[in-house]
Length: 510
Image (cartoon, rainbow, N blue to C red):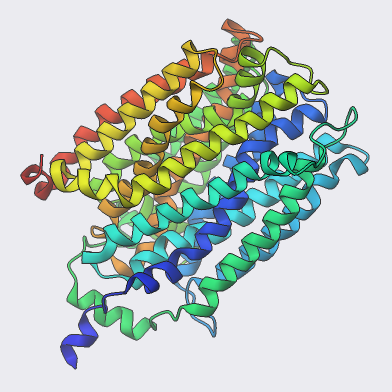
């Protein structure tokens, strides 16, 4: 009996299904957001150059929410459990945002209202999503981490297929796909409303069908599994304020550069965030020096500075991986409608056909990801190891982005999405499978939240800096963003090789 208590029981496929089914609904919400928000913003009157500024709410929200939710969920235990209270809260708020988004034209400032709803939606999705990453580690032993994240990735792909294809499907059913000037098409409206119901239902499935291990059980499991030790927060007390000062200086330089270099106004936000982190880290260090190490700020700052080496190296890979993804989500609609369907008029039939084709393209890459997660990735990782698997997949994705830069045929772009889908599957599975067995169980939530910061920061950079780059060098030519995306994934593929040294067992597979 003692041995049974020290090791987590293996989950059946049904157990793996229940643990991650809620992510199916969450990804429906993300897919609706990613595939349709540029269309919504343009329909409500936004120019292409203003799209990054309107999207900036999403990564900013994730940057703030994920570490906080990770920290809080590590310390939560109530009738619903440890992670499930956050699943439920995020699901309710996400459903509200999805219902209100299509009603934006009814408000006095529809573009501003839509941006506010994007903020609410992204914040709510992150409240649910971040604990789901830690939930797999909570519920599964190290020998099932790869399988757990593969099933989760399959649900992510399947949910994204449903969310991405729904507007196109409704059009085939006879629902109007073209709205009057300043309105949102019925295909988009009904997709958001149906998505809200699906999201809430899927998350409730996981809440009802799973039972979390108690803190005492988790402590027993942690004693029976080897994980990297967490750096104590009290180590902050020995740190100097130099790092904090450098962050503040970097922020000041960025702010000053906006006017002197003629950058877009959104870059002010980037500078402010850099300076704000410097201030917050200084406060965290000061509190630790006074012996106050149990507060949330000092805990987050201490854990950020004490990340395991493998996590630090994977962070660089994540940075470039997600830079390309955010470029894709913002710019695929403008690229396809302008270069493949030949229209920038949001009220034209050609533009709306192109916008719906984007939902088909996104459906393909997500469908490929769902299949690759269960079929390709396990086989490839057994052959060459997780590190080389991720590098290969990222390279295939980069080729897909290059096709967007070169190809002007709508059907041929489906082939590009195959490479992008394989890379997407790997991005969602490989880094987390590597991390889950190398993080301390008691801090799984906060470390997963901090790891997701390296998903959010590149998105924030794209939303603030990309607009300035495009306006300065390629005004009105969004096609060049696809070249930036291809280069980002090639850099990520190369950076992945640095991870190998931090995972000795990988050398036996390579």
